[in-house]
Amino acid sequence: MGLGKELTSAQKESIIAAKKLGHNNTEIAKVVGCHRTTITRYLAAYESGEPSKKRSGRPCLIDSQKRQRLKAMFSKTRKQGEKI
Image 1 (cartoon, rainbow, N blue to C red):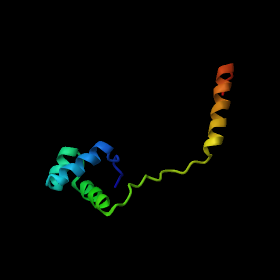
Image 2: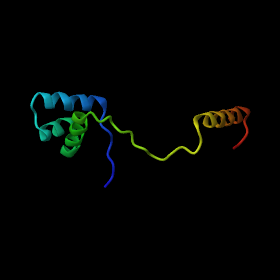
Image 3: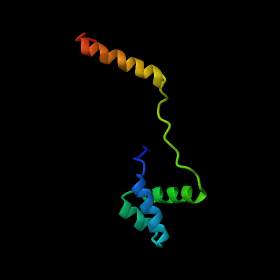
Image 4: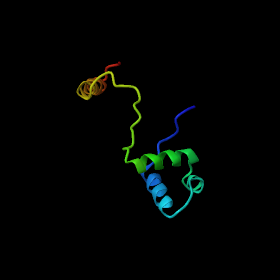
């Protein structure tokens, strides 16, 4: 079972507004364009005050400072015409 795309902020606002207007989760899902259980999970998290979780993904092997230095080295090498 794969992970789908995250809800956009516009979709999240639409879900909340539609729920306040009294629409059920199935109707909201059709309009927003996602599965009914996504609506149910988002509303449960919203009502409990739980902040949205970022997907963890793979951790970076180098920190941002080292990444900038590496990027600078490669751009300098390309400007000089050397092959990598």
